[in-house]
Each structure stands twice: as C-alpha cells, then as structure tokens.
Amino acid sequence: MKTVFAIALALGFSAAATAQEGTLQKIKSSGSITIGHRDASIPFSYYDDKQQVVGYAVDLCLKIVDAVKADLKMPKIETKYQLVTSANRIPLMANGTIDLECGSTTNNLERQKQVWFTITHFVTANRWVSKKSAKLHKLDDLKGKTIVSTAGTTNIKQITEINAEKNLGMNIISANGHPEAFQMVETGRAVAFVMDDILLYSLAAQSRSPKDYEISADALSVEPYGIMLRKDDTEFKKVVDAAMTNIYKSGEINGIYAKWFQKPIPPKGIDLNIPMSAQMKKVVANPTSSGDPADYK
Image (cartoon, rainbow, N blue to C red; front, side, top):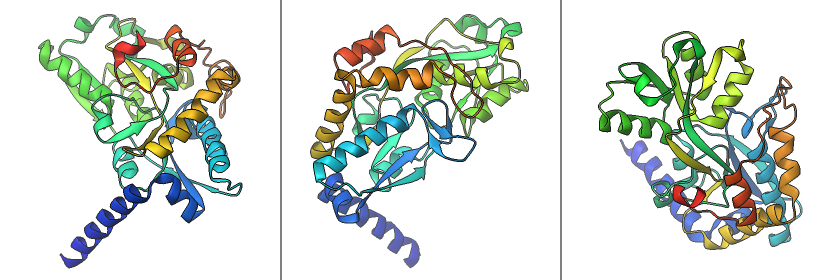
C-alpha cells in the first residue's frame, strides 16, 4: 500500500510541477518535447511500413516543434514519441507525460475542462460505415441492431445518448481501436461502426473489398479535430497557435493537406481523394480553436 501511495504522490507532484513550470519551461530544462501519437488513425497519425510515426497531424506537430525551437532559441530540441490510445490520451496530457497530442482528437467543450486545444486542423462528422448489402441508410435502420464504436471516444458517448433518447434498442459494443471496430463489421459481429467519417473512409479504402462498404449520408454531429496541449498553459498555447496560424495564412497548409488527403499515402499507396471541405476552408481563412460545433456550420 505504501508503494502505491508513493507512486500516486509522485505522479501528483509530477503533474503539479509540470503545470507550475509550464510546457515551454519543461522543454527548455529537459531539452526535449514529447509528441503523443496514434498507431492507426490514418491519415492523421499512424505507423507506416517502417514503423515510423507519420501522418497529417504529425506533420503539423513537427512544424509546431520548429516554432518552439525558434521561440526558445534552441535548435537542438529532441523530439520524443509516445504511443497513446483514445482512452489514455487525456490523462497522459494532464499528467505531463506528453506535450502535444497529434492525432484525430475531437475538440469539444467537455474536454476543454481537462485539456486545451490549438487551432482546429480538420473538421469531420460523426457517421457510420456498414456493408451496402445491409441497407442501413438512416438512423432508424439501426434500430435493435448491434453497433460498434471505439472506447474512450466522443462517438461512442454520442451514439449511446442517441440510443437512449430515441429508444432505438441498439446493442452498443466497444472496441479497443478503430481497426478492431471495423473488423467487427467485416466479420458480422456488428452491422455498423460509428466513428468520424474521415477515419471510416480510410478504413474502408484499406479493406479487402472497399466497394462492399458505404458511409452514411446522415451525420450525427460535426466534429472539429485539434492538437491537444495542457490546460491553462497560456504561454505555450500562444506559441502553438501562432505556428498553426502561420501555416494557414502562408498557404503552406494546402501542400500538407494535399499530401495526405489527395495523393497516395503509405503504407499501401491508397489515395483517399478527399478535397478540403467548406468547413475546413473557413477555419483556414479564420483560424479558431473553438470547441463549439455551431462555429463550424
């Protein structure tokens, strides 16, 4: 018991120290910055065939790291990587394990009570993927069916609330990751996988038979993605937001976006062929880190 208490106390002191000194000071004193990343959030943050961490959000994070180096006048800051999941990404940010979380994390008002976000880097919608043969076009078509979503996401929370509110009688199960959830639809353990549409498009594109799947026209919500940073760290957020704004205003975002959404990407050379949406163009023109979905309509 003493050991458990000692560890808890140490973690508490670590989080408190991080909050007190601020992320910029932490980076300066340690000489390193830690990026939290995902293993399979294609094309945002994932491992390629060489087990390198790559993706759209990762490219943006590396631009932010360059801005931090310039701000601190430290050209040799070490960039470390820490694998995170949907379930542990917020705790690992809050306790100081990671400094930036570069993935496909929805920025919403509820999460802003625990963490902060930089400028939105993608706008998606919560939809579902199913086999075309199932003909699940509308929400009512999911009544009484087994649905899957990924544990620790806003998506599973939302579909659970909708299920109760509309009395749809769905059996909602959770998966440990996006690939596992999609596989449940592939193998018939679930008829639909509720998730951000961009992730569904990438999973379907990589499947054995992409033409067998369809993504719902019905959207359950609009979801802005943001790179997470620690709450109440005004100094760090100022540097990070300025870096993101510069990427947008300079037009550099167009090349980065095209690289991941409109050209073949590793490891299989799949082209998602997704043009920048009107909502995302609006963010590029007027950068915002708002967690209110209404600001993206």
